[in-house]
Image (cartoon, rainbow, N blue to C red; front, side, top):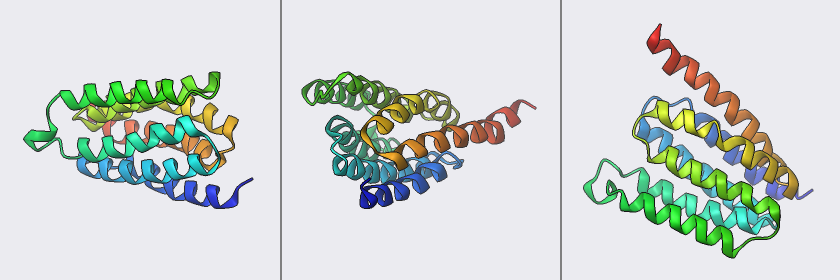
Length: 168
């Protein structure tokens, strides 16, 4: 086990978990950007090329999406660019059948983070976790896998705290 890679992933876990507990979109996005950077580095460290490349795109995607309140970043063209880039990079870096998992996870995550309402981000993000969980386990990114379990729990807690509470 690559201890250094797991330590990098631990930093990603902290940022990821905190992101789903934020009420403000800008805070969700800042923490998601930082988490993407950490997991990108971790995946390259364990040799998971497809996941690492997709997370590097995710890092830039989160930077752009965090600026959606500005006119230049609010164009739907960005959503199309990132979906196309992730699909193309996923195909070009294909390692084995497990490579489909981060492609699906990245596409769902891109759609989630394009949403303006944190509630929608949380709901769609719940389906991202299983894809990355399995991929991380296959490739030895154990703290990345742990992140997905914890992130799914955090998303559920966030939905209960912020979204289901609204209806009550």
